Length: 277
Image 1 (cartoon, helix red, strand yellow):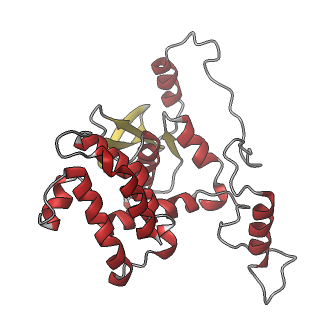
Image 2 (image 1 turned 180 degrees about the horizontal axis):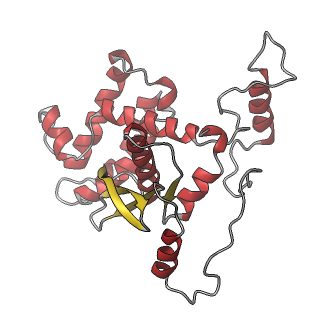
């Protein structure tokens, strides 16, 4: 079914790649990544199990897409075809899609239909996941599984007033004043994510501890996330890596502050307490 859908779209786009005239390879690659491959790998996190029998029927279509991008002869070696078309290995791309979907599920709200089952007092002992089925059926009847237009503030979250409501003080001055108020041994983590002009995305983090009203460097790190991620993903990944580094560091229990300059990342971490106890 998935291969048939990809072949159908590819057949409708064949006219764009004429032997003597046609669209450039980079445009064909963009069309393949945004229109053809989503049809081939539709719902792949549900059926991809890393078994050769699953990919056997898809490999021919995947190679045909690579040949359509490059316009190379049909007898070109598959490894050269995939490399020159700038397509990822099919198994690696399927693993990436599954991992991305798993990360998305990880950040879902508590009452989302696909969220992990939780204990409910009104659920029968022999049917511990009945409330999940009820939530799923309710969302299916209403016709909307996920609401991305509204944000519900968690009960535990408190709104902090801006230290510079009139924008009259420079942010660095405010930050320096705040650092002076931190007690000794307080941990401060700085994270950042960025995207270059060539599309490459990366992130970095630095960890300091306070002492004598100064910051003392503990450790730092950086990570390259490729060209498929966004700055938002990089910001969250930097926080994850920094916290993971801190967990294995020889640091006594203390207060930790994470300084993030991306409001979307802050909101994601703030409104998902049940997924990150």
